[in-house]
Length: 458
Image (cartoon, rainbow, N blue to C red):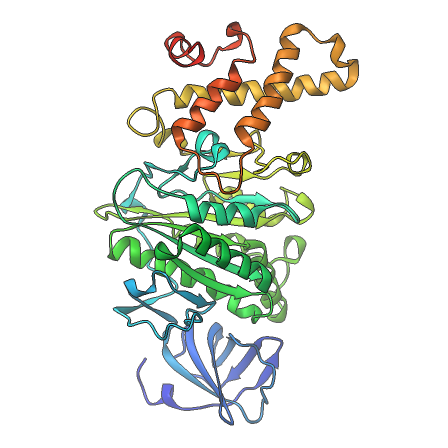
């Protein structure tokens, strides 16, 4: 839309919270960038809604200090674009993609639309091959597959930040292909941002990492742009440069709160818990920018982290996320109170694609059956613990008491590990066989006789 009208400056009709209402517009499109000027002050924004000659615009830096009578808005005629290049690797950017690490501007190879390019479902390649995180509860029980979207459901006070930093430092792929990580923080505190940066530097992850930071005191509107900038950088690395990319977004709950704030300012009719009715489709625009494309070497794997309000897994954010993604990793407050780190509840966790990234040629031939046996055995432990709380442990059978011993060893030896400990997949599987020795051989119904002979009896 490069016409004379687009270069003209026009005023604002109304200011509502973080929004500007502009009237008298022509040829303006949804998502179009705007430039806001007022007595030397310059800000950026984008169009949220167009109705006739009226546009609703969001201002990235907020509307504080803007005078409706003095402000002038220019419609640029283009959507927001992110300058991308391999120089981004190792750099830190703010929520809208501006460098904040003192390293100067990035020499861009080209600019890419932050809204992404829709990927034809028929052109999608099925996810396969794994990403090893070094965390036994994930690698052994809920294996992360390249091209998968696997969220982490956490709660207030649980160590999701420590887990995120550990994954950034330890994640790796088995092949020698290029592997990058993009970390985007959404609405976090300044001390949390410092914690992440310190952990990344200590772990040596900086050389393969791109960081986007949106802090709690940053404008709310910027929070809606940050994950899109991160995913745009991921698409560049994966589909233009043929790299495998892991994208970690934390905390998606803050993103949804920002979306609700903007929806309220627009006067939209609220849905569940006050969130807009389009929360599902909006989250899908983020999650579905994950995967592999036919004919492309690279892949995008997404690990969004969200905190469930009041640990409620039926809350709209985790509920809708579960519909879109291929499983979830759920953190347990009960395990956390026991001093188990990472407190991953394997019975509530699931990776629907793990069957395509484990087994012979991927991890180890015994992995699928061992995972099934561990899951089934730990599930029985929970039933026996409930029974023991009623009748007492002394009234349990010998087999049941051996299951209780297995449950304790499973939590202390398999689930629990140091935040700086990166376990190899072979080590994880060996620990799994070790704790299974607590239960009788007759109870090993999920593994083959050959596997018992090779791994359990040795």
